[in-house]
Length: 176
Image (cartoon, rainbow, N blue to C red):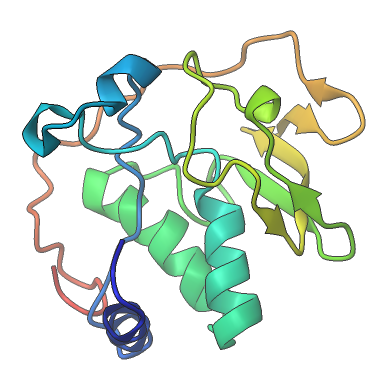
């Protein structure tokens, strides 16, 4: 919904270190709440959590040559730091082994039936990405494989954000 010039300025700001976190608000709602003749009656936000990584790889890395370490920092490390999730966000001894393996040679088209949301809608349905998610691991346990789908075993657990972490976390590149 933003102009191409505005999109380009956002990508420039990202590469200049002025954007420190990219995340999805994941604001799901029934399709009926997204339709109205009156703009202010329409539910804001999108269900975007499932598409964020592939979208950033496609638009950032493949289309604009944004370095993969930068994408890892703004999509994983800095959000974990911002929320005070000390075991998340990076691959290191003592950290959770939360990993996503990408198949750079296999394209994928996002279809509504592929969405793992209650309401199967996304502005990216029908979009083809040049790469695909091969496997996802949560704390070292494979929870998704492109060959077998989602694991039947729930392994997620609730972790509370550290409320003592200030919004402008020191040591985060680019500020808040």
